[in-house]
Every structure is written in C-alpha cells, then in structure tokens.
Amino acid sequence: MRHVYDVLIIGSGAAGLTAALTLAPEMRVAVLSKGKMQAGSTQWAQGGIAAVLEATDSIQSHIDDTLIAGAGLCSEEATRYVVERGKAAIEGLIALGVEFDLAGDNGAPGSKAREDGYDYHLTREGGHSHRRIIHAADATGKALQKTLSERALASPNIDVFENHVAIDVITDRHLETDRGYTDQAHGAYVLNLTNHSVETFSAKATIMATGGAARVYQYSSNPNSSTGDGIAMAWRAGCRVTNMEFNQFHPTCLFHPNERTFLITEAMRGEGAVLLGKNGRRFMPRYDKRGELAPRDIVARAIDSEMKRTGAENVWLDITHKDADFVISHFPNIYRHCKKLGIDITTDRIPVVPAAHYTCGGIHVDLAAKTDLENLYAIGESCHTGLHGANRMASNSLLECLVMGRAAADNILANKGNFPEPAEARAWDESKVTDSDEEVVVSHNWKELRRFMWDYVGIVRTDKRLARAKRRVDLLSAEIHEYYGNFRVTADLLELRNLVTVSDLIVRSAQMRKESRGLHFTADYPDCLEDARETTLIPFGQAISDRVE
Image 1 (spheres, rainbow, N blue to C red):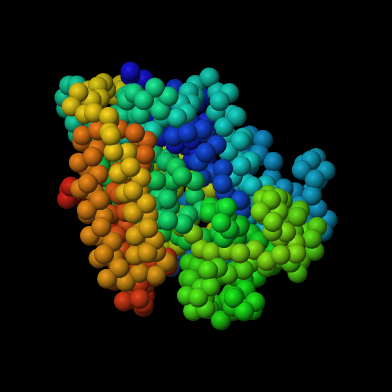
Image 2: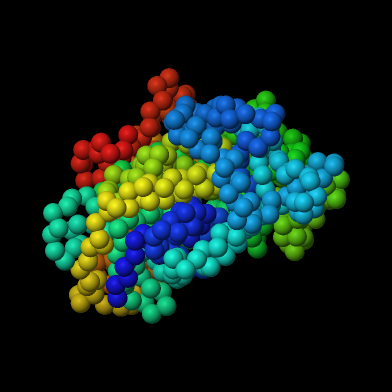
C-alpha cells in the first residue's frame, strides 16, 4: 500500500506535533507513531520548559548557563537561536491551551484560572542561575502532549497513523525509476503493526522526530520506544551523526523492585531536596560547591561514586524537611505514584539511582533542521543542533523540541514550491524471507546488548571497557544483519536492529574522545583537553556535505 503526503513526520512527540501543527494550514501531513500518540518521551517529562519569562532573568544569562553546562561544546549560535525563541514558544503553547501552573501569593503553585491575575510559577533546576522553568505541576510533558495531540487530531490536514513503525528512509536507490537526483529522501518504508504489512509513505519532505536512544542501556528513565530509530535510519541513509558519546544519566530515578523507569524530577532538588548516602548524611557538597544543583553529569557521577564507595544499591533523596502541603502541591504526581508503592515522600526518604535519560548527540543538522540528505529534516532528541554540547542542561530539551519543530516547518513552508512531487518507491519485497521460528534470539540479543552497554559504556568508561563493548557490538551486528535478511520484520527486530546501530555509534564516538568532558568520563583520560572538538562520524566515508555547517 502506498500513502502520498506533502510531509511525512516520523514521531508524535512535542517536536513532531509542533512541526505538524505549523505545517497543517498549508500542507497535508502524515504523523507516524510507533504506538499510541501518548507513548513517547514527551509524555514522561516532569520538570518543565526552560525560558526567560521574567524581568530579573535575561537571554544572555540563559545562554551563559547553557554554555557552562555544555562544557565547551555548545554552539553559541545554536544556543542563542533556541533561547531567543523561548518566550514565543511558551506563548504559543498558552495560546493552544496548555495550562501552566500559576504562582500564588506564597510562591507556590496556585489556581490555574489565569484570569485571577497571578503570574506563572517558575522553578529552578540544576545548572540554571534563575528560576526560569515553567511547568504544569510535575507532569509538564503530559499536559503538553495532551494539548498538542488534541490539536493535531482535530486538524483536517493532519493524518495520524498509530502503531506504525518506520523501517528505513526511502532514498534514490529505492525508486522505481531514476529521476536524476542524488542524496534525496522520498519518505519511508513503514511496518503497519495492525495488519503486519510493510507500506510505503511517499512525501516531498520527511522529518525525523523519533526521540533518543536511552533504551540502549539496562536502566533508563525512558519509555520502551526510545530505541534510536531516527538516528539509525538517518545513518543508514547517509547522514552524519555528532557527539553520540554524550549520554545523559539522570541522577534520580526511583529505585524500587516494582518500578524501574519512574523519574524523580530535578525540580525537587531545585525546591530544596537533598541527597543522602548510606550513612544518612548529605554528600553532594564534597563533590561540587553547588551541591544538589550542580549539572546532571556531576550529580550522576557523585551518586555512582558514593554507591561504589559504600557498596550501596542506591542513595536517598530527602525532602521531608519541607512542609507537607508544599511538597504535595509542587509534586502531586510523584507524591501519588510513590504513595502507591508505600513511600510517603512527605515523611519518607526516596530511594534513587542514576538511569540513562537523554541522548545529547544525534543526526547532524543546521538551524533549519536540515540534514545531509536533501529533503530530510531532524528535530528533537534525534538530532544534534549544538544546543546541548557535552551535557544537556535541565528543561532545555522541550524548549529545543518546540523551537526546532517550528524551524523545520518554517523552512519547508518557505520552500514548498521547490520540492519535487513525491517519487514512487519500489514495493517492499518479502518473496525471499520467512516467518522466524526463533524469536527468542531477538529477546536474548536485546538483553545482552543493554547489559553490556550499561556495564562498559555507562557513567564511567575505560579503554578496556569500550573495546569489550565494541567486540560484542560487532558480533551482534553480524548476527542481526543475517537475521534481518532472512525473516519477516517485526517491531522487536526493527528496534533491536536500530539499537545495535546506535550502540556502535556510541562506542565508536567514545573511543575517539581521549579526554573526559561533560557526560563522557573515562578513567584513562580524566582531564579535559583545552581544545574542545565535536565527534562527527561520516557514513560510507563520503565527503561532508557543504549544506550543513
């Protein structure tokens, strides 16, 4: 089956839906979602969105904070571009109907009836020098996803395809006839999970908005869908990837036998929560003068060090010294979730461990979100704009989704008369494959991959660990390539294929960086070099395109 649209957007989170809603007044858009629209990472975001919204703050301060957190690898141009558009992005969300918390007279979140005249409540998170995090209680992503999804579903020019998994970008080599173009994207091959058929989605422009790859690790705060699909697909299609070694580990993921992925927002530390070790004493001041408000990489390494030093399975996050009403009003979602597990955060310390959280590198793009492949764009966590550098600062991610989603759409709209009509690709050929009778291979390889990536390419790395990981990645890659070529595709196989590709990119990038910087810490090279350089991998060994600088 062939679908034809002006624009194909792969991913239904904040970035993808922002682009879709911007395009919809003038172009027909298809949005693909691996599962339900609410299943992606946006839905899980707790803290909020960073933006300069009050007079005591400034654009330059937000830029400076971001550059410091990025450890010398942020692009100042990209950082300024995103930060300067922060207030407009927030105002756009408010106009769409997102209900952010308002500040009461005591500074706590108050009534959400905006006509009462209160200003929006802003909180502060690690790395920020001001309160600039606007939020909807402690479930900002949920509020954002709900509003954007409702708007997209109501748009006559947006068709949402749930339970559709993208397989590969359609490029010139997949076309029925040679149209004389080179290095162009024409849509994607997609697995329809409802009827298990492979369909073609042809489009004038294609946008990757597939999120990150944190599920490559054994412990992650991300949903199961965060398997690096867009990064792997773009790499196979011929796009550069940059800074894949910088994987952010959130310091505080709930440690509980019945809950492996629940995040305890950084905003809790912004409101005064402290980290306690096995002995019940606060330890962060020994590692950084900023204490619990140090950037995430520092806090995560400190927790990892404390756990290894004392042999503890976890550390503790303690906000019990705050008034119970204050805690419940600020963190109602966390309070309810922990209470169901027998933890009352107003009286009990919260057991926490670090977990893979965010992929700071990704598909190399410019400030119009354009990749090396003509007519292919990438936005959100799947891309590398230069904003995050060697360490993403808290709550800059949703901001980037909104700003770059709009940037991609604006570029497509400005050039919509220049795109060729969607090209027809060859139909998916399953004549030489069969149904697998060894699905257990996929599940075993998935578990093995995530385990050795956690052990060898985690918070602290060494040359020996990376070499071990590379050998295992190579073996798995060969095995999965053979499996992929002989059996009909399934969602699990496609995700495993992408995770192995992304793991290889992470390991190779980490091996190239002979220093410790930001999120990449190696015991063999503990110092940070004076010359800060990005790590860029080029597929097929081709020359770097002059379309992306």
